[in-house]
Image (tube, rainbow, N blue to C red; front, side, top):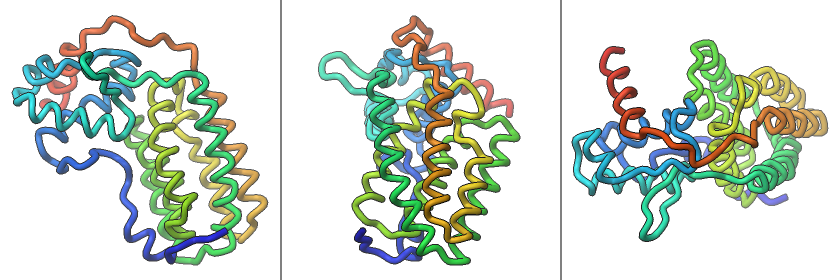
Length: 253
């Protein structure tokens, strides 16, 4: 296996997926966050139409700003942009979900073996810090943060090995599978089992590559088994009402 960058350099370069090219704290970022959290909370179902005019009215911004937010959401596979039809909450199929998790098992088992060989004490400290944040998010029932931190953990494991082809490929797989988890996950288990992460990290710390690979495959099967892939898409929903409720809740929190 060929890795092109040191673990320290890769972890310094790594950033969690999200927001595309828009600036954190901007009005476009606020739209991005509100739509993402409504999807994760199952308030906006797969296939729901996101009208530029409607979003502009809800957030009091121009269509240009709305368009920037939608493009960032599309970049992260949360929204699908259809020419002459507009933007819709993405609706991954059952086949998509099978393919994504099959791909992740192949890639992450290989990464686990290599990471177990290369991992250093500083890497363990970094990974434990992510798991502490993940545990805190799960205690608060903060699914959006838990899903994001779960993806961060998996990518940070890959970063131990550098920015090789498998690591770059994994970024895309995690971005897309995070949407599947957000849309179809039935409970805390589908967010990404924290106990599995802890067991996996113990195997890495022991430099036991085969154990780490086995735990990772079991972990991904666990997540996939918790998905409710029969959930209806394209359900009628008051998109403006859902997003206004989110803004009102944020204003009082």
